[in-house]
Structures are given as C-alpha cells and as structure tokens.
Amino acid sequence: MTSPAFHMIDRAPQPVAPFSHAVEVDGWIFLTGQMPTDPTDPLAPLGEGIEAQTRRVMDNLVLVLEGLGLGLEHVISARAFLTEFERDYTIMNDVYRSYFPADRLPARTCVGVTALAVQALVEIDFIAKRPA
Image (cartoon, rainbow, N blue to C red):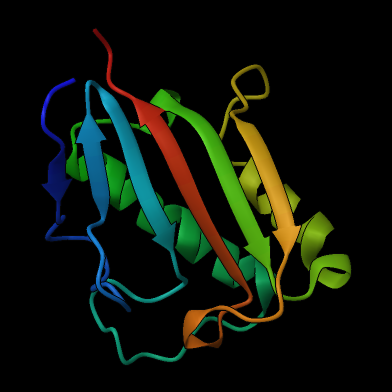
C-alpha cells in the first residue's frame, strides 16, 4: 500500500470541519461528504429546499473530482444523508439520478439522520477509483 495523499481542492467549498476534501491511496479516492455550501462564498445562505441543496452538493462533489482530474464516471459508491428522509427522498433521488447515465449508477446507501452540519438537508460522499 502506498502512503495516502491528502487533497485540498482550491475550487471546492471551504471545509466546515477539520478534514481533507479527498484522501487517495492506491488509486482509491475517498471524497468527504459535501454540504450545500457555495464554494465562492461560504457565508452565503443555503439553497431553499432539497432540490437546490442536492444540486449544490453534487456540483461541489464534481468540483472535488475535477480537481483530482476525475469525473462522475469514476465514482464507484455514494452515501447520502437526509434530515427529512420521507419528505425529501424522492426529490433527492431525481436530482442525484440526473448526474449519472442510467447504466452507470454507483452503488449507494441513503440514510435518514437527525441533523447535519450547517443545518443542511442533505450531505453526500463518494468513493471513486482512478483508472489504472
């Protein structure tokens, strides 16, 4: 096993806690869960509703992937966390699904939680694999 590389991506949102945007080891990339924060203005209010917040989270994840020279086609697995699971699950799925081709959906877990940082409605993280 090679030593892990800890990545901070300039264009990605500032972390809301002490973490790297991604950690890479042996071609596997573990992307920290992204919040629906504006990468250009961390003090901007969060988007209204689950649709806007899910789009911002996915766009933030894309920024991290791009900063590593990767894209959504490299995503192997995702985890989604929702504070209002029953209310927001269907809409979050519709937005999430729009980012991936129908025949290349990553494995995924989605759970309901009592709260998320910055009072977000959604957080999503990824595991990606760099091509050999």
